Length: 384
Figure 1 (cartoon, helix red, strand yellow):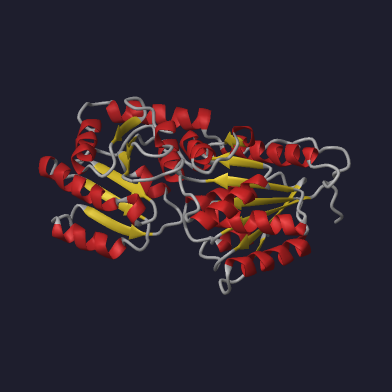
Figure 2 (figure 1 turned 90 degrees about the vertical axis):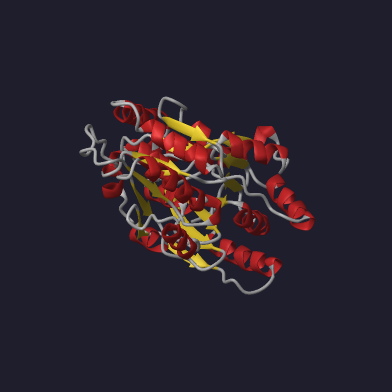
């Protein structure tokens, strides 16, 4: 990934490295975790040091951070929320970060309170989707956490509306930074494989919120009209057993293949004609951006921030959530006209190049850290 040669200019009195602690719930496989890993992996290393603290067990993505030389630790799952906040505050006093960057509601609730107790100058929070803290008491504590947070970043305009309207985050504290990907890691395919009846791919966690069950019912409708159609499902998760049962019940064993989790998804994207996403809630899904960077148009549900990624009728189609009939109709339509897949695929790649570059995303976060530190004086200076 190309990076800025020197990063942002630091405010007077602040010398590198700027220590940023990312607080997450866990490091299981998912879009949020990939975003945090990208922020760490692609940071301006001459200026920023990174550290990760998990509220629960780390998970499979921990290895990626360790390969980057970034320390990962957990505060342990036992005890009440106040006790865990106290443990986190003790760790922050030891690490002495300039910035605590929290990700999603639970991490924000714990991280903002702990940062307040540890006198960390800046707290930045990223809202990766539509999730909110539930319960009156928790909601009250979360609003206090927001009051102590320097800036709240939403990954989509849709997530920003939730933060503004439901979580009552002041508009002046809120900004949108869409997720981005390292485009250079995804090869754009000029020509598609020989047409053998249509092939699609979906990549993501097998989870009820992704609603792959609706996708399977849509595939059944497509296969009824295109007997050669195939779907590759890349990913794993709690819904896999019931989805495999549903595949058999729908008579799709020879049409749908479950590949499990794969760290490298490029070969699956390269062999497909288009990408499918059937979620009932989303932020700005990285899997969709990666598919578009590979030249795949998308057929996706019109939820969350997906409309901010797919341009309808130009880079793919949007359909209502939980409607196998609408999803199947779009899947058939995208394959109906010769040249449509290639035309939409080229437009998809251009859109990612122009709007969702990881270099730009990392730069905006680094600029934000520095801007917040500049406003936090005199508490900005923290000894090494």
